[in-house]
Image (cartoon, rainbow, N blue to C red; front, side, top):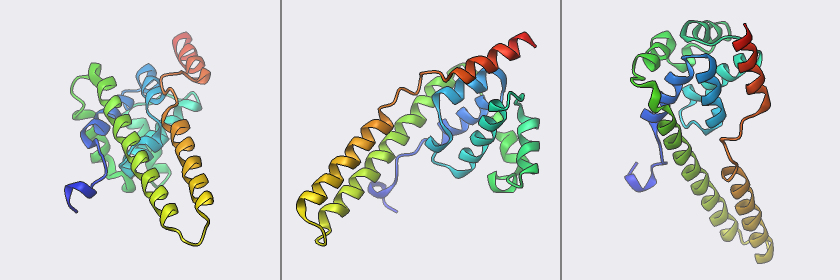
Length: 172
């Protein structure tokens, strides 16, 4: 695939964000406030972050061993590259303090992928001679509106459940 056809990606940044989330506690909650699983390009990262989100929503603790165990119980550990890959995410993290920078890279790449998908859908609507031009235009406008709503949301707004989870952790 040539460079012009490649989707925007941030693999190293995604790995860093996964490593930060695997640290658990408030750091995992903060990561989940910034990056949603579906914003990750790599399927293994979506699975790992979804598992972490599920555990935090249930007010369960998160760390490398606990997440790996839950992935194994769910039959998903092999799908994400095994225990070795999950461990690699923590080992490669480096400096935890920079995770927000990496999260911004992940979000930027996701937004660009969303824009490309929208542009492709709009091009297909424009080429569809089976519908009237005004219908095609309406489809394009709806897709643009959905794109604005989707990528324009403020991912830094904290969901109240994360505050409650942190408070319970603090009290415990």
